[in-house]
Image (cartoon, rainbow, N blue to C red):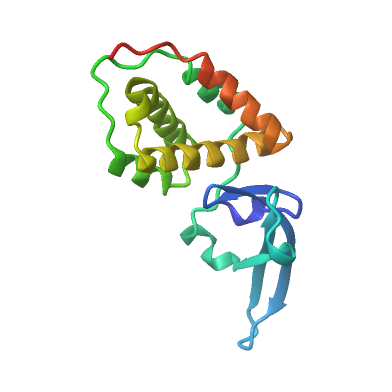
Length: 172
């Protein structure tokens, strides 16, 4: 991520959450060099006492902070949820959890799609571990969709649910 592109008021994605940059502070270090620090806070879920987090600019590349995806990309990926599944589809919970740990919207969509198909195929046999991963994927995706479309989390959840409902049925 380019340090110069980070501006106060910009939205960023970190740990699957949408954040707003609240301020950038420049100060001199004890050695006389200039140090920049980025301060950010939750865009949607307000933490206890509206917590503000910070990270030195020199460490940003180590944090996996990124900008939200574009509206076009969001629409494309939501539309991809409506595509028919691969006939040889086989779900792997461990790989899905690894993908959910990434700060990658495409990976989250892929996991959600796989879990949705698995849930429809397994019905009552859909395990609680799979359901937790399913809910986590939905939460991460909704947070970014709401950020991208400048909507509420409720509206983002409705949009995501609408995309999932239009997913073709799966033959077991």
